[in-house]
Image (tube, rainbow, N blue to C red; front, side, top):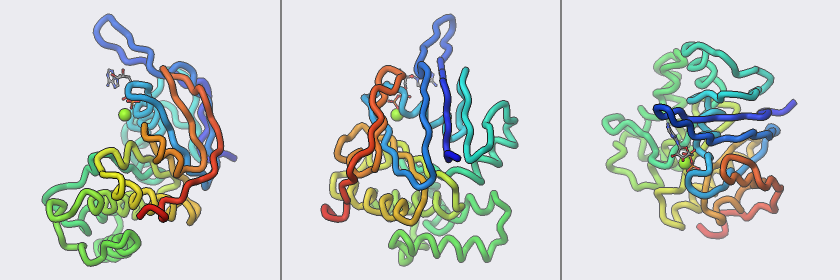
Length: 235
Ligand code: ADP
Ligand code: MG
């Protein structure tokens, strides 16, 4: 059974009397353990697709099954529950809370899972350690570099132990060397068996995945397995 299965997905945005047809019949599936790049130029619908996969938005047509669960007509409570349980998010702009320490940022999703405080704190430290930032646990985001912030965000996404990690241009705000460090971490997380989708418009980042799905004007124009370039050689 596929981890992600979408069939004939359509999405339009309604703006007044105008409608913008952004996704025009997307079909694809992702098996557990894959590392997939979603490529395409700006405006091709990458974020729209990722937001639907992340249950942050809904398609107008088509089906989406996540780990055997049909994602359809969920109320906001149910959707939030599934999001928390199934999905981890990594964004270009990190989306950390500025007045919370690195450890508090990582622990926050666990609070929403109603995990007891002590367990949350232990888990936050464990995952910060995994991204090499244990010594930075008490620091605020403003005291961290861009690469460190993204690693905190990755620790936060991992701490909830999601089935799928969704990253929207995770290296978009970082220089090349820092980007490769983040990709090295993403590759290692994938090596451990985690399923990851990375939206990017940068070919060198896409080549560090194992499969590239190319979107153009709302349709998949290419979907190919690639020999993964390891990021470690560049860091
Ligand atoms: P990408 O991530 O590939 O750059 P997006 O999925 O963000 O592309 O956007 C695809 C198209 O949909 C763009 O033309 C964009 O302007 C439009 N769009 C995205 N989000 C919205 C929205 N909430 N309302 C209206 N149009 C949107
Ligand atoms: Mg985008």
